[in-house]
Amino acid sequence: MARSIWSGSISFGLVNVPVKLYTAVARKTVHFHQLHDADGSRIQQKRFCAADGEEVPYENIVKGYEVSPGRYVVVEPAELESLDPKKSRLIEIEQFVDAAQIDPILYDQPYYLAPAAGAAKAYALMLEAMRDAGRVAIARVVLRQKEHLVALRATDEVLIMATLVFADEVVSPSTLDELGDADVPVTERELKVARQLIEMLSGPFVAADYRDDYREAVLALIERKVAGEQIAVAPQTPPPAAAPDLMAALQASVEAVGKYNARWDGEEAAAAGAPKPKRVPAARPGRATAAKPKHPPAAKTARATAAKPARQPTKKS
Image 1 (cartoon, rainbow, N blue to C red):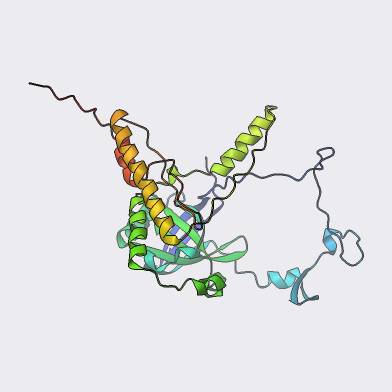
Image 2: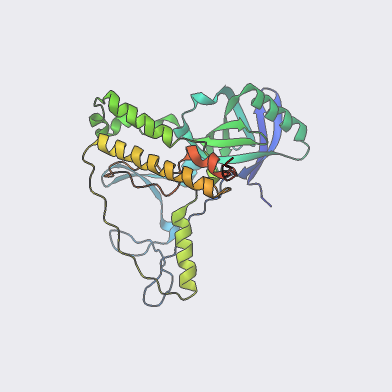
């Protein structure tokens, strides 16, 4: 059973909708502890003074902001507390906007908003009204002594609140030196082949089709080690040779996908009801030639799942 991490109200105009806040994403990163290789004991982190090498108790540590190399301004906790945003239990909506106006790079952490006790009707009304309007609400809320800019959007069954980064926190692409070399002309032939490859690898996005293969491999490794299995480290695969040119890599990719499509079309007639294959991963830049896909492209996925009757032999008269 999920447990709420905050409760308050959505406020817009004179309307208040009591809600509870729930975490929408549970990260599954594998965490490791640092151990002493000699006896397996945990490693402790201690704070030492860089000047005299002595350990410093926590109560003697203050916060300092570096204004120049080696020069700091000390800020007292009371001074920071005086600047804390006013504690509030309100998600204060400032405006409604079109979802397309919000650059996806601004989205940070998602949360679910569920109705509090007795607020089911007000919540349902707001959910349906926002869904019908197709708008996203921009609001401010204080969480953990910090004010956040958030976006509220309605899905089929729940309101989702996502924290947003502020515009001045987004790194401008103009700071990337390599982009200066990217403004080069491309031929119509190169563009045509690139579009062909995109179309061959296009299909509907299904989030459940993608898994964290590295995390699952790490957990499987840990389970085998717990069971006492000796793990042999496989040698690294040498990187492929560099592609002679962009056009050669594009054509090789199209040919590889096309050959697999032909083979898949032949196999699906012999194996009706074959399981849905995984999507073909996009080729990484800088590879020599496109590797032969391990799975059929998305364009063929729907055909693979449908049961296709075997062809009946033609009767001779």
